[in-house]
Image (cartoon, rainbow, N blue to C red; front, side, top):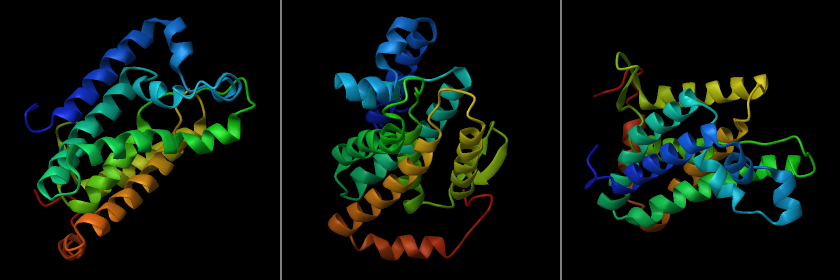
Length: 217
């Protein structure tokens, strides 16, 4: 990790790790910060839209999200700065708006359901993933350090995993947030490019014309 190149991504990962580890063994803190639509509505605890995004259900959930955030977030952070797309301000908006917007459908669906709770950075991470894919869909990523696939294929598998886990419904992870986070990340990035650097679309479209299942790097 190079802090000088991607400070925001590293800080976000560190914050997620610290708060998640605390939450693993502190039920009082967890209950006060987890996404709990019932209390958001009744007690105006809107901070839960943010605080719940820095908590994770277990080590695997934490690792999967942070590994994904590091790989894709680092690229987005660098690209937003290098190509005049608002730099770190745009990156932070992408992350936190993705976190909030991805939780809204579940909030409205469960605001009167006392039993429903969720946690995880999945909505924000999904937004970052799809922002990165807009710029470099065929870059390579190594699953478990050995299996080489393209970023685009990884993103597809990421969403499939989330949909599958959502249907199982056996944890407090808001897997539905992946879908809405992904849609937000895609739309936000396209609008950002159209507003600030429309000339980039020519290069982006050219990249999509040369697909590679295993990636080009």
